[in-house]
Length: 486
Image (tube, rainbow, N blue to C red; front, side, top):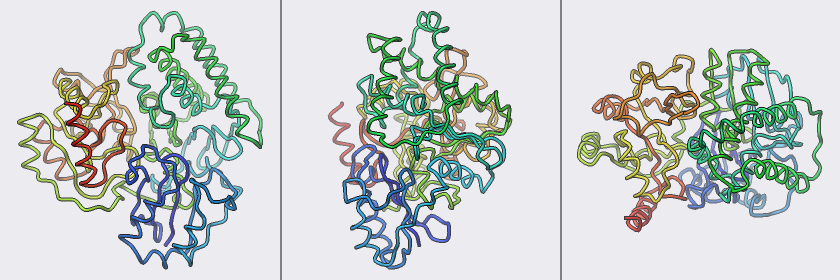
């Protein structure tokens, strides 16, 4: 057995044996602290609660690979003494200096795809080992790597959140909602400036030589200052919509320049930047084959995890009841939505119908659910659909093999109707509606979906600012929060 640990924001622990997942948790689900960066003690303890034999049977501990020095002292983020006490027969896996953080991101998406590393693979995030921020692979071999950290797309995204007074490494997903609110005046009058910024960022990434980063504590504040100056130039009044539009336009512009330059239509993506489903939509439209890693963030690239292949993300063992299909259908028919709390909990950032509110895809119900949960209404909700509904109502589904099951790509609707607008995002630049779909593979969920035409809304079962719930106690706590918003 091996214990696979991700450290930093979204810390997590996975127990693996013979390249198969046994169980896995993200620390935030157990601590209640969104994007918890603490060493995942609670996750490990929960694993040991269900699998006490792991104390003796774990022979190797593999740690996330964004640092290479495993002799670091005890801290909030790293607890080697805890590892030694709880896994006395285990050794901490020595780092492979020829295998970087970005290499692990790439291997993660390849193994998700059963070892398929063909075509163009793009990895982009804030930064990895020695400041890598963009890596490009062709047929599994590294073709290009940028250390142009001052132009890092991941840091641009993160620092935009900080600039707007929101929570970095937590609220990034909200930018897509704000982006659709930007006015036409801004789009028209800043078009040329945005093209210049896209070019500067692109060539900054594509022409930088190697940079060995010795002190990120000095470099990162300088990168933050650079982006803050750029944001201030575009929006001195800190308008969220205009900043979101700048970030999204640069993100899509740079990536599409890259894709066109390489001209390879078989594309795979990994790294935190590619949780941006609108960016993935642009790449999908360009490609003939496209896959996005459902664990695009660091929880998907712990050292050792990249040897593992998987078909689902239901890894968080817990006590729950089976779905009562008829009760769920009745509640949706009578009040418009129902709560699903069943099976093992989802690993990663998405609710995939085990810890979910299922709702009719009506705009008024989106507002009602958000109000009950104390959430703002800036983000559209995602549709969960049957396989037939997906193929008949969305463009480009045939280009995607596995990613369509994990809500990591926005697909264009073929047609839009009033009764499904709650499960859509309007892209005003292209005058189309998109949906961040999850194609359901659950027989019981599909039975519910069929009752309502093959489509419902799927939104995570949590109150605002809280992680997706883990157990019945969390459910009760969420209920109290909901009551306070009524």
